[in-house]
Amino acid sequence: MNVLEVERLNVEVAVAHDGPPTRIVRDASFSLAPGQRLGLIGESGCGKTTTLLAIAGLLSASATVGGRVSIAGVDQFSGIAGGRIPALARRDVGVVFQGTMNALNPVQRIGAQLREGLRAEVRADAQLARARVDDLLERVGLSPTLARAYPHELSGGMRQRACIAIALAGEPRLLLADEPTTALDTLVEQRIVALLDELCRELQLAVVLVSHDLGLAAHFCDEIAVMYGGRIVERGAAAEVTGAPHHPYTALLLAATPTMTSTKGQIVSIPGAPPDLRDLGSGCAFAPRCPRAADVCAARPELRELDAVQVACHRAVSR
Amino acid sequence: MRRPSAFGVGLTVLALFCVAALLGPAIAPYGLHEQVGGVFQPPSWSHPLGTDDAGRDVLSLCIGGARVSMVVAVAASFVAIAIGASIGVIAGYSGGLVDGVLMRITDYFLVVPALPLMIVISTVWGPSLWHVVLVIGALLWTPSARVLRAEVLTVRERSYVLRVRAMGASRTRIIVHHVLPQVRALIAANCVLTISVAIFFESALAFLGLESADTVSWGTMIADAFRRAAASSGAWWAFVPPGICIAIVVLACNLVGSAVEDRAGTRLRAPRLSRTGFAVADRTAGEDA
Image 1 (tube, chains in turn yellow, red):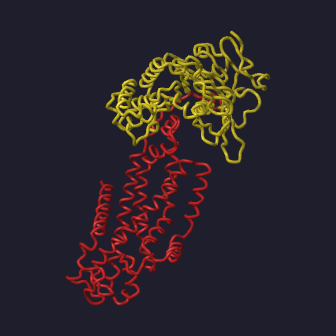
Image 2 (cartoon, each protein chain N blue to C red):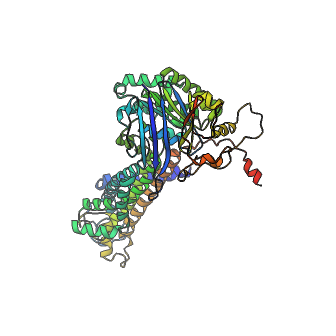
């Protein structure tokens, strides 16, 4: 059974009180088997974080969610504002956010915050809970003595490790990670990614990773979904998508990613600006910025199978 | 080192007044209702602050009056903070309709001129200390509700609150464990600051005769002195000491309150770590130029 199934997920948010709702996520569909990892990639404002929040049931009441999300076989909501997740399914989900000071409660000790995430039956037994907290801290490479520390006493990398430990405290089957390494420097980022990789393999966790770092996603995930203007425009195995992109946007995104070994002096940038989600028009959202745009792009492309991937582009050709 | 010292001075002064309020009659040199000298006797060795219009010792009255004034002010401030903090936190955390309704109610209370309404209510309810406490408390909660709502609005958007919500924590749990601890310093600061306002209103009500006649507070002392024309007969010692007491307590409360607020501000200010993305050489801009 799939851990996560997302089918035609739509999220609309009323930005102004009187204005029409803006559709942030359009018809996103994907599913994850245990241990499978999906990377959601795209520019700021393309809807990747909103997709994640919708899955986690964390959208505010001003958002309307449509479509179907089921976690471990439990249907999460059906068009309810904000989307309330039944408590039973909650424990199958762990979330990790960008690791700043705000990801942890600054006036609570790390241990207390870890204990809070434990399953009720574990938390009820003080001795078991303590052992579990120590174990969790050790698992993420922190000393158990840090259970008594406050978040400000930890470094950025240690804080992110603590956040991961908290996310794992409830023994989830699905991990939702939103830019988990963005606030860290490259070396720490590498270690955190290695840690996540190891833990997810060990626990057979399904992961949705939201990032704008294509390199990180390609390295960490099995599958990559590239989002643009609220839609998934290309989806497929990480190697396929990053190795031989079919969608012009993915190709440009790859070209714009600096690599350690690149000898080019300049980084290619994609001309133009991300689309205005309030006014996307009826055609392909990327067409105005696309070097390969043609007349057919006035009609909206649907995701279609091409080679080993799914791509939403009229101009994409098999290779 | 200036802020801690302001805090220390304020706290010491408040502590002294609290001791006076608690011990009251035990440390006062004379009884509260005892005639111990002539009318409006100037300060002397036996009566350091002179005597009032009934020949009572002003120093004893100041010490005894501290009890009523402080108790009323502190109790009223607790009432005000209990109402204000609940409304502010609930409104800030809930948002939407609940926030709108609670804040509109707050708006109404905010624009009502407090003192006239207090006068009306205490007149209707009749003179009693507890009425004064309730009236002051019921009208002084608005600023704390506003301040706390604003702070809670920022707290509830922090990602650890999101994270805890994702784990399925109930609203009550989040408020008690993750929101209130963030704002408790603010609540403390507001509480102390409200005491200073409450003590002022208490004196005003007492001055207007809306406290029962046989209670002795700093406000009733000034009222008595005023009615018996102490000022025109040159008996400044009948009204200046209680006035100074009020001023000192208000000042001390403000020192403590703002020091607490400042400290909370620095301690709770989260470091904003953000990594700016790599700079992208904008080729289109170059071509345009």
